[in-house]
Image (cartoon, helix red, strand yellow):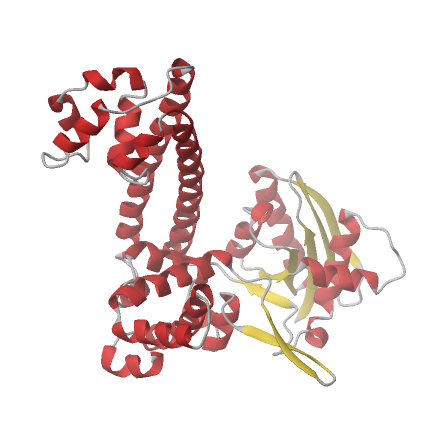
Length: 401
């Protein structure tokens, strides 16, 4: 069967598509607006072209995710083969030709030409074209939720730091009563942002605040009554503190709601259940990790999974120099989840703690030792998911240690 090669340059408002036949003759080109109705009409035209030419149509995209959605999803639903091409590799391919200019049309043409040469430039070791497959509904849902949750966590951290700075300016003693990351202090600030009213707070009103128990309330009430603060600009600080505290409180609730949603979705996936069997690995981290890597069969070996997560190094040798370097295009969310899993395991898993301490005695810093432990955990996780089983302490501890 004939093969048609298509290239799509992704943009924010428009996408440019060019399709070439095996002789590199342009059969189809169009500027596609980023509108769902227009994209669905394009799908009908592409299916007609494929039927008319009696050929199999595949596409190369410059970059995945971002503005490519929902175009890539529609193409996958229609059964077209999709490949992701790195921007840097496209740039090098474009520079091999005499033309120095660059525009959307030329990028789409270069992608089509690259895809036409796929059998010559794509090898098992050097993959220029990365296949794009339709993820399962569970992993895609977890990925969307975990990334949104991380945005909320980052926002909460930023606001907490800003709130702490404002408290240091007007009432630094308040921070001695508790940490801002705890819900009780945030709840107090959200309800009582005006420090001039603290001497009038009663025990009954304090007990109505979520997170404050009967044992904590009396000493906390005494501390609030004795607080010293700067009286100047109190009304201005009241507005800022109230805004920050209420938003942080709302973010805490939203993060917990996403946790519950991820628990419900994760309960349907065996891979998450397997990861949760590792001591120190929570539902949030296991859901986030599985949502980022997708199905384990995507990776032919544990080394490929380690490279994808940015844990393993790749060779960087030249002449007599034999070095390695870190992977600069790793999945940062998967790497972060894996490092946090390693950090949690050293507190409750004796074998992981032993390996971590061994690396520390070798002179490695804390972060370096965690990365070494995460690299070993990748081996265990890969075997668990491939064999579809839970964590086994007796057998797997020997591998980790």
